[in-house]
Length: 466
Ligand SMILES: C[S@@+](CC[C@H](N)C(=O)[O-])C[C@H]1O[C@@H](n2cnc3c(N)ncnc32)[C@H](O)[C@@H]1O
Image (cartoon, rainbow, N blue to C red):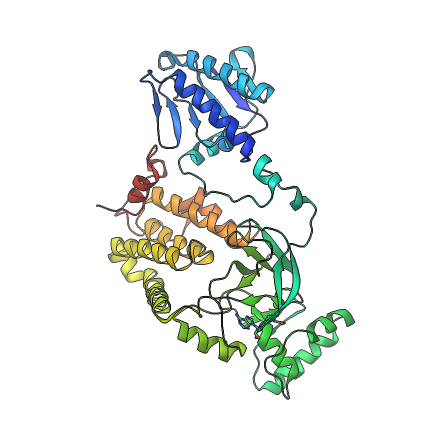
């Protein structure tokens, strides 16, 4: 118990240039004011006031909700002066947005404590820089275009590839580009005559418009079985490894690239396929997804030819032989590490080796996919989460779950069941079935170190130098 006092920022600051500039000026004033005060420490991501409950001011202003402490009791000595001064400077910088409150006067903060604690946790790691998609977003941190609900793409014809989806506007990483219901779903039936008649039956249940949409899709396997040809050219599996696949009027116009800028995902709750930008896409750029299953350029080429009937001429496949060789070596290594990282025997008996493989895999993915490995990163983080949770390390497991969650949000959105599952594990990693199998690395969630810079934090996270 005790009496709290401080201020809340209402509404919170945006990540736009104006708010960022104002926050940086405010932090500069505070730093100058306390430059000779040993109790005000500059950490990599925030200022820490070492009095009372050690209130913090983050360097990223959009994360900030509250500056406060208990102001009564022996541990509170000196903190009132900090709260008083920081509040005055904040009021001068942000006016009525700064809401002072003091429980001694029956005044309470605007935000709930769980919200505030979540904001404190977010100070520890810097956000990935967000590239603004419009001038308005750059200046004010909001995107008025998003509210208009316009299609983010147009359909164009491209030489050598036929129709394609091309971005009409700049599209931010993580933005949902499409969420589309299948015209129908089907399975790969044999013999092909059965497949053909099965599709014909499904087509009869569609409206005339939908039938036309299906028949206008590209067919790379013309011949005696046109419906099956269209399905083979266009269908996307309803989830990884699914036997059922869906055919879509718009999503099936998206071409393949071995270094795609978008990710397709079957959302089983929505019963729809979603497309998300996994990197910043510029207006005029083609929107692409991967049809392949990874591996070297020759194995990709064979797969794309057999499964979809085309020769890939994307920028990666068209690299010079030495460049392609380096990419191939990375892709082969990625596949080997991806296969070995989940090996249960190794996870149980040589967890440090498995974790080291995870770190190497992350570096290779970053190099090969130029920071846009999307779903591959999400999978990797889930794998290393499992290594840590199997050995009772709740601290690292929660950090990996958080990273996996962020990667999933980018490529699948908040409403994907997989995203929600990882989010739950982020809050309660001990809820995973493997928790308690071994307690070799047992530590609690609270033991995530605070105040480290990114390099030191990563060394801790991947257990380097142990
Ligand atoms: C699902 S469709 C995509 C839309 C198609 N371009 C159209 O005009 O309807 C797949 C077909 O598009 C073409 N395609 C897709 N990606 C390609 C690529 N990277 N290079 C060459 N052709 C590609 C191939 O003919 C492939 O079979």
